Length: 159
Image 1 (cartoon, one colour):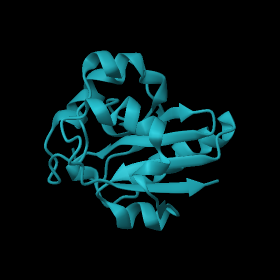
Image 2 (cartoon, rainbow, N blue to C red; image 1 turned 30 degrees about the vertical axis):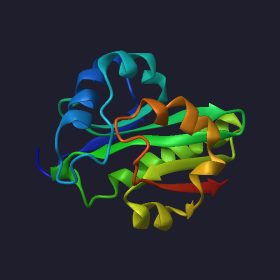
Image 3 (cartoon, rainbow, N blue to C red; image 1 turned 135 degrees about the vertical axis):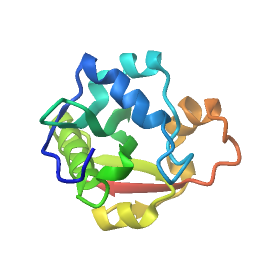
């Protein structure tokens, strides 16, 4: 897929699950930075996802999810852009869509666990302690193969 392809940002559809799964499972040059999600997890959380899809054939080029963690906290997660589509601002568009969705839902604190700190800093996130995110630690982190030796940095944004 060339970098010049036309695309559209939209909420994910059931027909996007295989494409999202492929993105999350395909090594992209920064291997291991995004935790893979099973088909079951993707179908169960499909409403959390935004995708950027090719206008020509609906191929999923990038994805990101906004996952509600608690009454006043949500997480930007599963942010992946296909390697050949990078450098076009697609990740920024996806994170902006998630932040807009959070505000629409009345959630004004959004965090990410990441190894790409400069990107999230550029978006306006600031570093925070993982201890400030107990819902995340007890819900997802305990089931992660990297736990307790996770090297991800917690970043948060107050909207």
